[in-house]
Image (cartoon, rainbow, N blue to C red; front, side, top):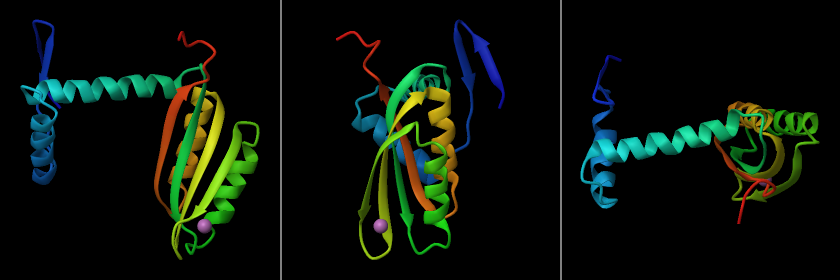
Length: 145
Ligand code: NI
């Protein structure tokens, strides 16, 4: 990636699959942005904030959502092992049998941001997990109302 800097603005070009580029154009229009750069800048800003929340020393609360096919060999054992290893951080779980194959698992977590991020990455990367997502919020302690 080549970056050109000037007047407080960094310019760079990126390559996207054409289908994704078309979806970006559509979203930019639908959200009312006057240009693509502002839409992309807002997306990057949101991700930077999320990234900081995940990697810091700060105490956070959140949820980890996992979707997996319980027929995939060893997936449930692997996920349960990880959860037992971090029982002090995982404060509640909910398991829903979505259909004959798919399971939805929600874990409520509380602890240091970097620790929670590591556990979420480990769970999401486990073989058999089709999709996973960490949603971060505050513990409420240092959040002015
Ligand atoms: Ni299930």
